[in-house]
Length: 401
Image (cartoon, rainbow, N blue to C red; front, side, top):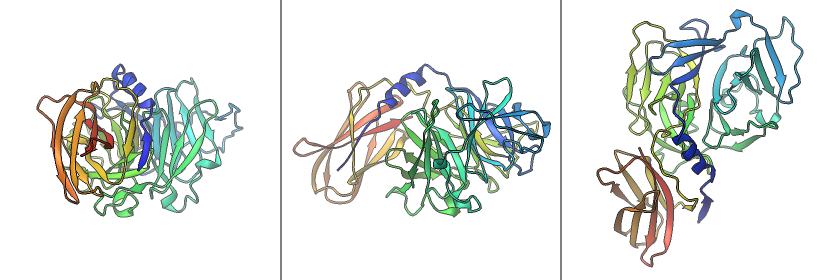
């Protein structure tokens, strides 16, 4: 039986995010002109309208750029020094705590960030070898997805899903290659490593400690950071055939704002629970195809979730919950490798109050649908499965939007 401790940062993140309003802005990696594919310009977008608020960096403006290492030492530069984004940017993440825009170039193994607190255009460069993912002329090694999670750390992911990298943001940053993502047993043949479905795109995070990978083919995977298991939760609906999803950020309403690198007709917002997309229909034509989006919002940040005491979470390969977050207040419990017999499934809220309890007789592989009562509030719930002797054999958390 595999055991993991529910991280204590989760609860502080819940409290912090209840008191922190989501912004409705994001940084977009674009080209200088619409329809181009030279990803070197950083713009700020209003996610409510899709309008450009400002241009943060454009190499064509020839502004003086200050380069520093993570130790604060300045690099010598001259007129021939290339721009900070010269080889194109496919992954970016905004660190709201320190007001930094981290990014990774297509063809280099450096982790960089724009220091947005500086009155100058300042870029800090981390050359730590732990960020190296191998030869970048091999597209499988290119970092194309990046975000900040609720633990305050940044996470970057290569195209092939075989290198998930965590980076800290303190005075002495630590970069750790966590290894490959692992396909969930519930993925039904859709692998997080498959080039045809799962490369490219972007990542976002939620307040419950998960990452979400939205691929360029608009497949969505939920990633458990502790186990690195990637669960395929579906494909975004209602997008045009020409739309590839390359940038993703959470907007002020908790929806996922997405952009395309090849389609400059419209932006879309997506309900993460239903994966239904609706168009943000701009009338002025001011739409940039973008390779990446970044802001500090977390999915489900607006949910009114009461703090709960830290508890041991027991996960195993015998029982699983899906979809999680629950869709339309319904989810399934899948019994896969448990002895035949009687079991009780119980769901409680964050204050320990029982929401539902169901007695189940298991005779083999089977799914049991759990429907929450009308009026069930959005938030975090705890689920427990007990055997006929009353012993708890499974505990986990369920998110209800």
